[in-house]
Amino acid sequence: MSEADCLFCRIVAGEIPAKIVHETDRTVAFRDVDPQAPTHVLVIPRDHHPTVAALAAAGGGLAEEVLAAAHEAARLEGVAETGYRLVFNTGPEAGQTVFHVHGHVIGGRGLNWPPG
Ligand code: 5GP
Ligand code: ZN
Image 1 (cartoon, protein in one colour):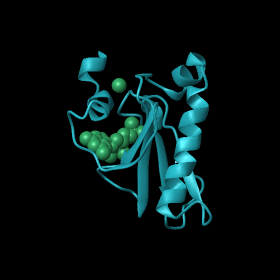
Image 2 (cartoon, rainbow, N blue to C red):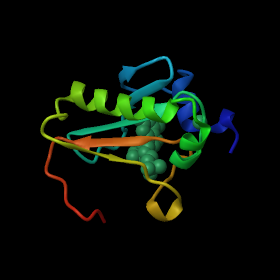
Image 3 (cartoon, rainbow, N blue to C red):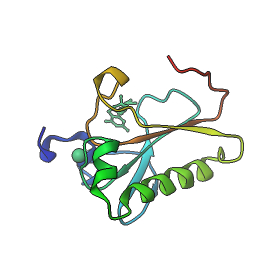
Image 4 (cartoon, helix red, strand yellow):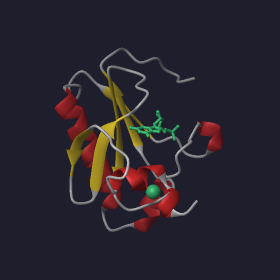
């Protein structure tokens, strides 16, 4: 998929509306359109990397920035102390459907383990 066709690149570009909860120069955090918990925020780098593995391989501190932005989103949502889950579905069998890396920040209720 080209970046022009990428759903989350289009959200970064403002071509598709999203409820943004936090932004930095290199990251955007916005509400998932189909929330699975009271807090369900997606945290992405503005640059297109398909998976968390590609993000880590890209270097330059971007992966760390995404992790820090995820925690900041959790703090803003009020779940940093009560607890939250940060999930990077990676590949089809893990349920990744959008191939622009995104961390799911999920919280605000008790979460089962192991996940389904
Ligand atoms: P994945 O299944 O790839 O781990 O997660 C993709 C997530 O993106 C899903 O939780 C889905 O609800 C969310 N999503 C899909 N399309 C949109 C959209 O247009 N806007 C927003 N905010 N979330 C979306
Ligand atoms: Zn993209």
